[in-house]
Length: 140
Image (cartoon, rainbow, N blue to C red):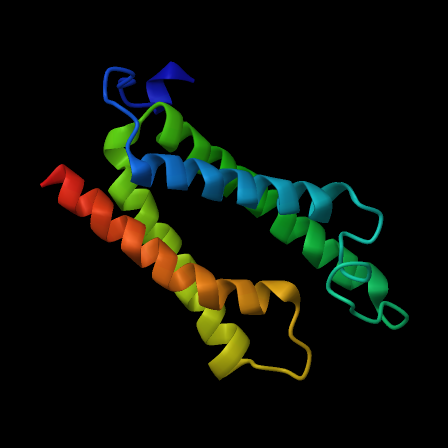
């Protein structure tokens, strides 16, 4: 595993952007665990989706997304806590991911139902952009 990781930088002081990234990591892992381990993956209980028709497929998709959230959130936590030189890169990727989510939720595939995440992403975008700007300023 050590061969996969850059040299840790524990001497680099935690910055506000790295702390924010740690929070984002937790906010990815926790829902990911709900999607993977809850019986309905949160599809019915949280997102309010009707699982009467093809519910197994929907629950499976939620579990797939949850697995991705757990991996992505774990990586964010590792960068925030141990590999802080990568914070700006990860915040930029997070901004890209959330922008694509917003684009899909509201423009290209809006649908008639909006789960809580579709609203949260609208708040998250400017906040992530702010912390990315702080991280870049802190670096420069």
